[in-house]
Image (cartoon, rainbow, N blue to C red; front, top):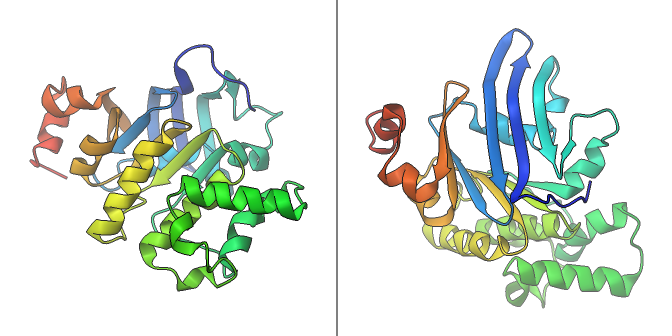
Length: 257
């Protein structure tokens, strides 16, 4: 699962359809997600963008009656192939949710949790992973003197950066973010946005956001979803200044949604 694409695409979905029993949630979605770029997914509530995001690390597998058609290629490998272990996949393709979800453990053990599951027991190695992950998540200076205190004592914005550090600790290639700043205050949101900008140097990031100003600020590419379809996908500047589809223009100018 650690293969690197020869092209500039990190993930590619081809003719992706998704069904929840008799309900079709995604229709023929084909997107090339570029390596080391931020791709934002926008659209009104219930349009399929979070469903699409969850297809990229098979989180929809846990919902009864889910059926997938088409391909999701990571490093040229179809992640829905019979030889792909979803648990291993989710190490390579990490996920950050809307609400911060730290474990009820201390800060150190939150970060060390994943590496320990993957067999790392050496204390020095774990300590190094914890520090590097917290530094990468721009949180180290704020928590270095309280690593053995509960993560639940952190502010909401700190908790979200802790969760990002927890994802980084298992050395992913792709980070999925489902509205990671929607529950945060403006200052914490700004820190998360700054962090995303830094992280794309080393990771491919896909973010779902309702905040179009945020999409315009932080993403390189934007995809507009409507009723389960990918209406338009392009460089962010083009989507926001010269959209090709009138439905895209109507949404970004606030005529609906």
